[in-house]
Amino acid sequence: MGIAGEGVTLAMLFLLHALGTGLVVPLSPSRPVTALAGISLVRSSDGTLIDLSDAAREAQQTMIVLGTHPADFNMIEYSQRLRHHLPELQGAGVDRFLLIVNGQPAACTKLADLLDLPSQIEVLADPAGEAGRAFGVSRGWRPDDSYLNPYLKLYLMLFGLGPRATLPSVITGYLGNPSGRRAWIASAIEQGQRAGRWPDNVLDLSDADGAVTNQFDKLPLVGGWGRRPLELATLRLQNLKMAFDNWSALKPTDERCLTQLGGCTIVGADGEALYSWIDNGICDVADFDEMLATLGE
Figure 1 (cartoon, rainbow, N blue to C red):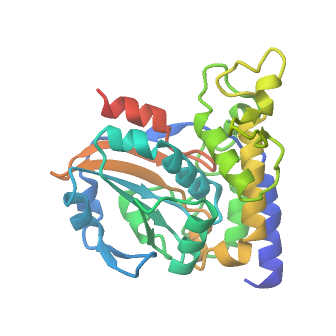
Figure 2: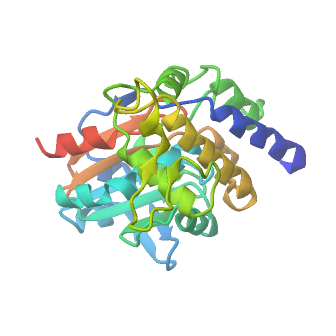
């Protein structure tokens, strides 16, 4: 694509900061292992080839995240949410975690290092996004139009073309939600601050006893909200800076993955889906608290 194309992409990453979380669309219960049959991906940590269908049957419950490209907001947030909720998911009976990233193994390893992902999360490289398409994720706006530049497609998706949950996400991302949940956001911001990422003044980490003070707690009137105004947007700004600073290492090698969205599923040893979701927009990923509630039913 060259320098000009990459410059356009970086500009669009800044525009992506204006997005919050949106709606998520549930898939009907199905057999994801059937859809993923015959697909094997390289585990970035050791180069082992993992057959997705077989891997899903080797544990009592397996979570498979069908991610996006390594520098994408959806991919970063899936990783951050999974990192935070991992103990709860394990407590709910999930005993294997496959995180599929639409990038080369080196880019997958870079993302895992940046986000300090624990070793229990197996990061699998899918540079062409094959697994996501087999699963049925959205391919974005006009995916088969070879005449339109993929960067232009991504830009226009920001204005509501294609999957519909992108624009509504602005409201919740910036205005907050009195009944929302913020624990994973604080966890992700803390990890970013400790790694030296900007903004680096959201949490006060200077207490000798290890106590963490969140500046959003001090907001008048809304400090007690479940998710405070600008809280999620601040995390996304931190993620944006990370993606910007590491673009050359994280950028996708297959341009189809620029607009392809993601999803996730949890399957039992019999291959039946216990939980399945597909993203319906940029910055629109599965709600892990709802996921856990479903597993507990």
